[in-house]
Image (tube, rainbow, N blue to C red; front, side, top):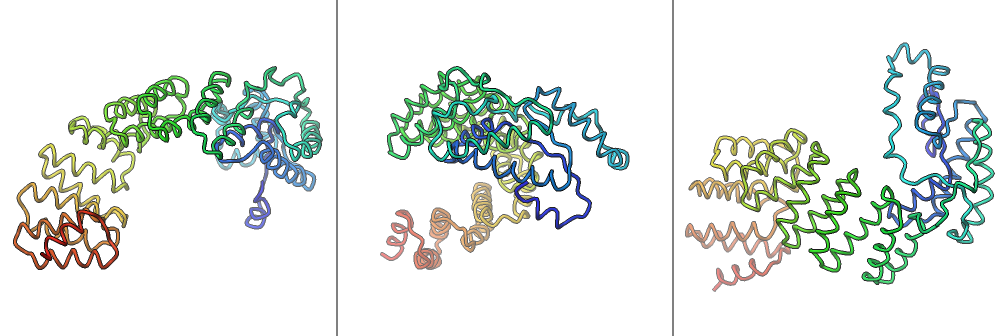
Length: 415
């Protein structure tokens, strides 16, 4: 709706169905996204969107739908709008009205709808918006012959609403009071409805990482797996933090749970395969990495992980095929790593001269990392090519690359 003028200019055959939702539900949803937006920002966004919706409807009427109806009623009004105003499209485009039930998802509803009665949570700016928002909402409800939600629909206790807690948590975060923010979030989790807790859990995970409490982080993730089964991304982020803190078994435990919840999510499969490889479990890793490759055939990371996995399992031909598949994908930041890892494998196979070619390719990449340069120089020294090693190290240092290992090896070559 906010970009409607652009779309009107691009096509002469546009037809519309307008959908509006209760303003307080929208404001709560915006404030719950952990993006720093407030209830007032949500109300302002609702007002801007729906003022344009009403203006467009007055210029040329089109079906208006109320999202706040029960799911079966919402789908029924959508079906009626399509049958009444889009009958020719249904016939020519082959639209399947029997599939409309899938259009509505409970996952779209993050807050229970409520009236703008609890002004205690609004600033002065919000109070100024309040009357305009209420008036427009009542106008829209009148157009679709739906009774506006009343003050009685408010939750009896504002503390049950996520938006009651977020401004307080934001203030503590800005003040750098991590422990106080964590305590507040834990208090909020005990009050807020389970379906609204995901934004709070994201904050808790961040705070656990900041405070370095891996044991509590694992405990929280196990709770999240029960309370927020629809949010496997929370489990993925938490598992990555556990892995970074050296909690390999905990990371694997959480990733296995996440994969059960979302078996077709590429990144979950990839991470689980990578972490299983680090835990010296190549057979199990291979199954997940092969699944990841099927889900993301254009991912150089998946092919590279499989390359290492096949090499570990002694499947030489499969490792070679995976290297070529990874190298053919245009992903410049990954190219240096692919060549470096392949050189490591070739060295393990005893093909040291061939490995040098790939180490050189890695070093020539603009995305080369210090440890790749050091590995190349050490291999050159092992082969008696001291001058070439010195040149590689000096060039890297002259290009601004720094690391303790690089400096130490360069000093050794110059001695």
